Length: 296
Image (cartoon, rainbow, N blue to C red; front, side, top):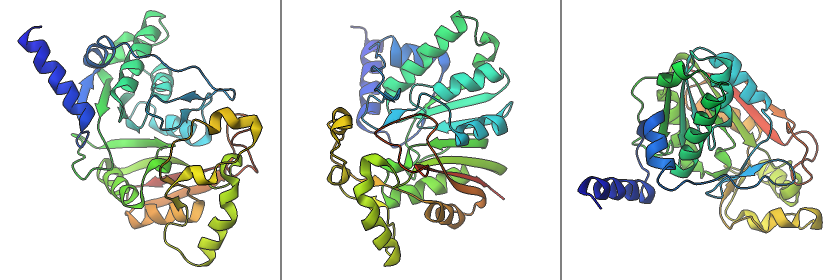
């Protein structure tokens, strides 16, 4: 093994152990560093079409939801960032939509970035995405909940879909602070979060309502999500995959207040139904909450 290879391996290992900063890679660097060395592969889709992430942080929707479509429309031909973009579904759609869009894809798992880079290569080979726009694509391995998070140049729009559910209240506060500093004046954030109104965790709803009535801070935060899992036999295979750990449910009022506290002007914050069919998640059409807010 050459000295250069040893240094590269040690550096990647260090990234894997601690991701408290943002390291940026071009398309070619991401493909070489994160994909060609380990060749990670996407898991098989679940019965509702969602593809599980490799780090057990949820699953990727088979369709684009209202918040994501709004992000793509607003961000076309602009400088935009996706936080927690996993396998690059939204990135591929944005680059197919316009080769002039400057797209930066962030994730906490380097395997996801590698797969996203490989999928981008496939689309280029299939001539579905123009290679001329590759210079506009960057992959960011970093954690937006860290105080050390920095961007070289602010963005016009930032998408953060289905990420906040895995954060603690303190991490959410830091994430909002970093979102604010990462945006240009007039830039917008697009956040999609999970509400308590989902079939999988519907047993939490009465407790959630009581917490709100009692004026509890962070009423949607639970220390162990498995305690609230619905033991419906129809979705037992998905329930079995739930790991012990904290979870954050949000609603329109709570999410709107978080954005305002960070300095944002809230343009829209509403409940939205799922964009796909799912026995595991569908309940009453309030399964997600979408926030669109602007930096003054």
